[in-house]
Length: 217
Image 1 (cartoon, helix red, strand yellow):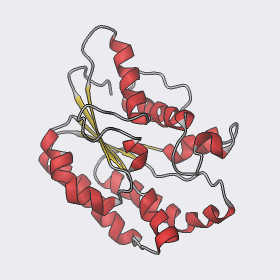
Image 2: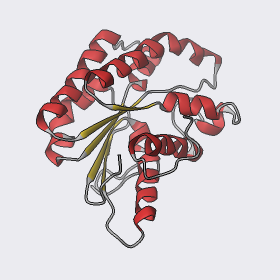
Image 3: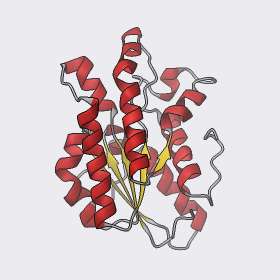
Image 4: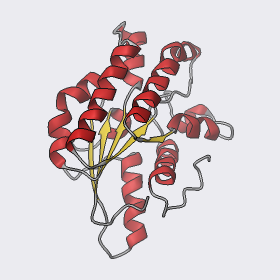
């Protein structure tokens, strides 16, 4: 796929998408992978028109928070491409707050959001997998919840014809040559390098006109 210069790309998710954006400024993209993608696409067209990019990530969100704001933050914008990055907080809250998000319920909610988008829009769907790069011994146990949750994300994406960006695999590949903390200081929130790797993985899967050298194929 080649992204149209006149298209609208919308990104929705948790803090990894939010990346410190100014929520009082609708044009703010934050300092993460969304901004990296936008910069790459703008650089490609030079002085010509570039796709409009909208960031609707909100720090701390779980899938149920997305459900509550899906119409206003996604559908109402009528985007051409919708990218969803969600899941790590559904796991994290189990370990720091004992707030469970059963995988079956999580999957049904995500599947419902994607299906709703298919019904109401002609947008292309993109789903970015959740990821974890453990930097403390206790984080290793999170995979007991995160691995089946990632499988649920993949099933929901496949059921709705979504393109999948395997951020988990891209970052795991990068971790062969970088320390985990160099990619995500707390194991979850990417560093600038981590965000660039996610952006490159997205570009490699979603926009065939852009070469993304850091993304494993």
